[in-house]
Length: 212
Image 1: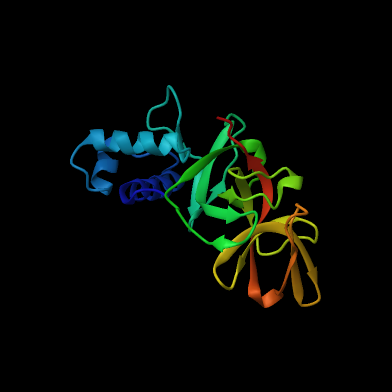
Image 2: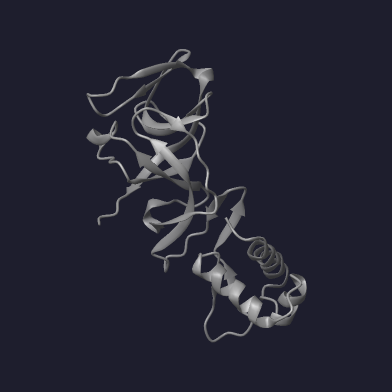
């Protein structure tokens, strides 16, 4: 998600600003993360700002604000009405067809419109492979924006992980002790599994599509 030095500086900034209500000096930051030059601190600050973790306030000395907080591999989003887009982790691929082995790439990010997201929730992106959800407008190559949750309402689209470490995107319907993984394409068949064979990873909140 972040390099070791980026995270080290981000943690230091978060704690310092929370305690003192101003940001530390470049000299203090340099000493805190054991860098030899202030230019290295400048590069770290620029990278954190470009990723949306901090924002430098113009025309104010030692003035920064934290715009995201880290929790495990996900990002809790603090909304700023001035921000039009936010980066979230792109954790790997998801099958819209036959399930594929789960892949995680927590160092990759995808930029999404801030309107796709809501405060106090965790989000991640997954690249769609396959056409089983095509009738819901979900195409091969799309990026599925997923809100992290362990439960969804019947009829909603969710990312689910099977006990074989395979992940897929399907309409979910739970009946008694079974979970139905329902495609949105007549060429694909519904799968029925025991509830203890599946873990819901999150609910679909949006789709990002790029055109060549």
